[in-house]
Length: 115
Length: 110
Figure: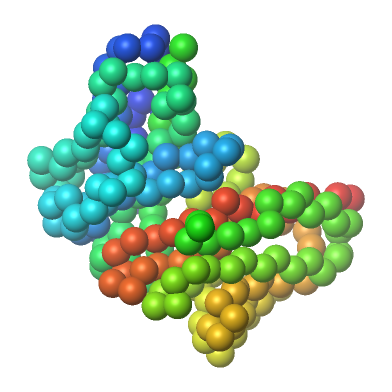
């Protein structure tokens, strides 16, 4: 079975450019999470969706960040305009039971570098 | 105050050693607790859940102390392959939010 699929795996861009990260959760999973990981701050929850509906976006750092989940098999995280401090690894994760089992299935991450 | 706090380490131990990690959490209403493992430049993966009565999975033992709000992980007979970062994870009262600690790095040396 395919796991969580993220793209791109690596992106290098210049400050001010728009960045779009993509995620395909595991089929049948009803919750999707976006995390950001840096050395300084560890793994931070940005936003999560249940049944395609955004439930909590309190972790989104500012208005430059937006996330959508138009259907059960696709989500995007967009940064516009990007800044050097956005450089991080962005993980998407999904889970089948709103997290009751405790197992989040992570994608391999999108490593973003903003110059 | 962070939801979950861990000693970042690193813990440098020889093969065969026993090593223990602790983490503390701030929300007394937290419902469930886990340890994840993250290898260098890889995604986190579930290692084991942590139950109130304590639980064991081979060389790994996890314990929860609700009164003191801390979670522990004990690794016996360390292997080189145990070298990784171990993340303490706490699930919120309504199961929807997973809070990750910053991780404890373990280096097992030959």
